[in-house]
Amino acid sequence: MVHALGAAPIRVLIVEDNRDICENIAAYLEKHGYVMDFAYDGINAMHLALTSRFDVIVLDLMLPRMDGLSFCQKLRADAEVETPVLMLTARDTLDDKLKGFEAGADDYLVKPFSLQELHARLQALYKRSHRNTGNLLTVGDLTMNRSTLQVLRAGRRIDLTCGHETTSTIDGRGAVCCGSRGSRKLCCGLTSAPMVMRFARTCTSCGRLSIGRLIAR
Image 1 (cartoon, rainbow, N blue to C red):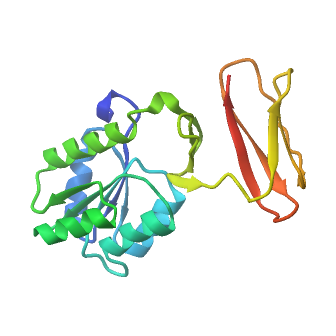
Image 2 (image 1 turned 180 degrees about the vertical axis):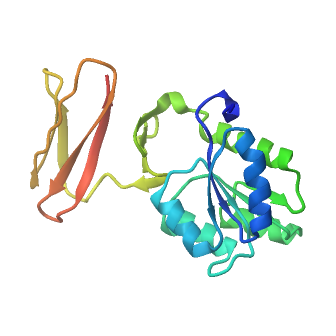
């Protein structure tokens, strides 16, 4: 099997209630090395989007339990998940497309569609979202952008502050230490080999456990 883009497989969540369309998409994309999960309604799709990491979400609009527009709006505004979304729908008017983009979609493909075009659009979204991977530090589903200092877990933004004054230092022995006024210290060792580390702090004022920094050496 040849992975898409000659690298790690692209992980895609397909949100579509038509099983035949899902089977056609799966048969085609599997040949290109994609890893796929499927959801047939908006509620299950939201659960998967919040608990798993995906590179792209393919989203139908006319879904049971939660329609595609509501799903996309909640994904962006409430869950703050930034995973690229490609809307795949039979709604083909300009007004429909504008509503899709306003809800947070990154691309829009109208049914009936070419599987080859779907593949090309998924590649484009993947490349665009991974354009600055040299600035990314990753541990599991946790990612930090060294340029923006933004941290994501499974595509969801993490707020690193709890509203209380904190400080953090790196000591001369290479250990990452964290301390804050009103917090308990948690430390983790850092070896000399290039790697990604993180530390966490528990604020005694609010009880919140949050990630302080990621360090690469």
